[in-house]
Image (cartoon, rainbow, N blue to C red; front, side, top):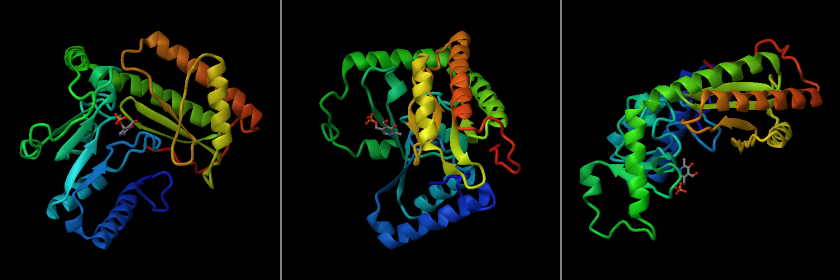
Length: 277
Ligand SMILES: Cc1ncc(COP(=O)(O)O)c(C=O)c1O
């Protein structure tokens, strides 16, 4: 995981370099000719909205291309303007060979798709890519309408505006509550990572569970994420109104104040705490 916050390297660039080295060793160990493809989420979803340095994504792309390893962008969470651009990978100036999409594609109706270079897609014979519900006409009709609306109503701009507001609020809470070790995001994918101590960055998994339970009591549903189950993500729909967003943020803020007080860590007085750009 290219996790700049948890990396022992001094900077994002150094983190990218050490992760690339590790990736290269893995590929060499397995043998590049035995690897058909590398699959990467432009921003890790369940991993806790971890945004990789652009240099890492670009170098992985170059590295794979030089060894005839396909690059697949898993856009299932990042696709369809969630990051502020149509696909998350566009932020990194990389063109993948294939992309997987689902979730936002049909706004909740069950549909997934593979998009890719025509020579790869056309290499599959008719019937070669099947699934029980593949090509469901109702889900496909919903997807066509979703795509039309996303573009016509400029949901990219909406995602960027929502993301800026959530990021600003999360950062203001980070200044007030020592429990929040990191705040990060891309477009409307914004998350905060909870820690028991900002220096050791020990994951605050229990406080995260308490925060989620507290928010739920007031009607706000949150889901834990991250390798250590200590990340709270903003996962609202891009069609959320400003008022709905504000009421959700207020519930989360109250829950955070309660849990921080229970943990005896109300005020952030830690020096040298890291805040991602
Ligand atoms: C990034 C990512 N990839 C793949 C999947 C699996 O998607 P599906 O259930 O549509 O096969 C998920 C599901 O949450 C996901 O978040």
